[in-house]
Length: 191
Image (cartoon, rainbow, N blue to C red; front, side, top):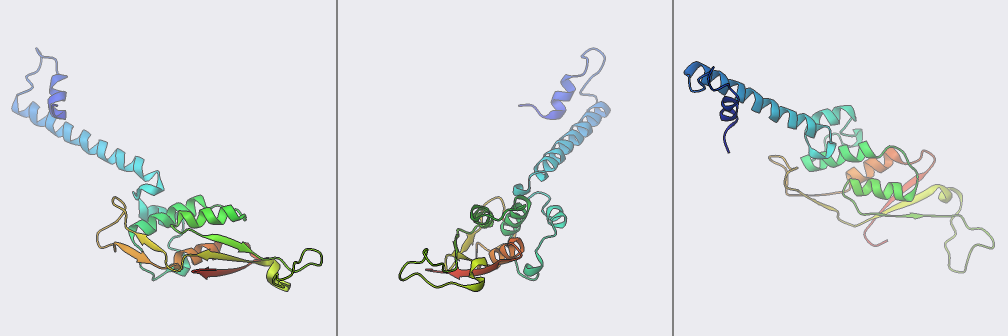
């Protein structure tokens, strides 16, 4: 395949211009370089439209007010920062179990949710726990004891760890998104 400057030279009328002339050849080379740079920049702008590409990550974080206040000072890899952007961008509202499970999944966590109900006559069976008072507003997020986020090729930056452990990002985001009247508990390991 020929270079862009060769292709531009082929567009010149053969009788009117000598594409091999030094001045014209240098001008065409400069135009080819400018077009190549423009094409590269256009690809970067297109990729920045989608938060999961990692392009324009600082802008996405600025617009979405990231990192979250509860994560200030916590070191995050580029991959975790991209997950936080995607999670916050997609996590606009919802109060159902599937919403919170999907929200956690977008952050890289596999969870289940347990809800509690107060004891009522006629609904209670022998051996059932007697939840009362605020238990009607309480829910527990069940997560593995240790959640490992592995680095992914293409989204990690220089100096990022190959794996990170911890659930601070999960707790932070779910506490931000939980309904105001609810009580959120976290259970790690076998629950």
